[in-house]
Image 1 (cartoon, rainbow, N blue to C red):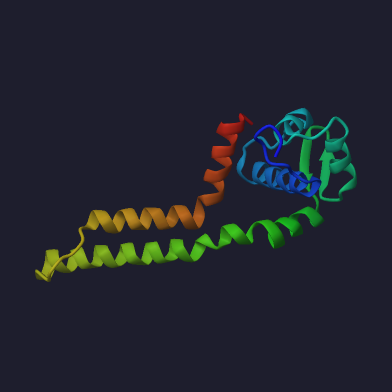
Image 2: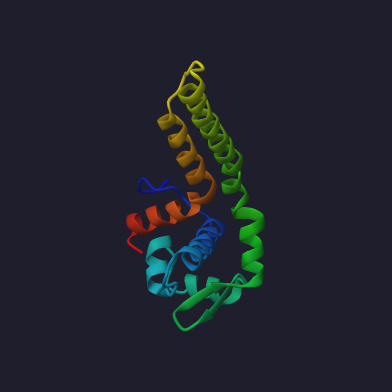
Length: 150
């Protein structure tokens, strides 16, 4: 460690660049991003980001627009997204548990069967499950956008 920051190898920087371009192209309304902004965010040297964009094979550039090439999209799908897809079963479980809580509340309200949890608990679990399953990556991008001022 130097100066309190972790040392990063070139592959880590390239991986972050690929993921940032993927998130920006997928979840931002205006996917154009300046190369100078990416350079300052990720800590690339003056020629390093140009080299990564032109010769890595992961990107296609047209003016200020940077998109992932087919190779880049495959890399994201194969290497980067699986760790976020691990949250999908947890999200589905929370949704199911929330539905069961609401069903239990309904049974109490209609048939006077014993109640353990209220409908509010079920609704919160369903919302939490939906966030984990469908909105984890957009929320991650939103947090990065605010934190790094993209």
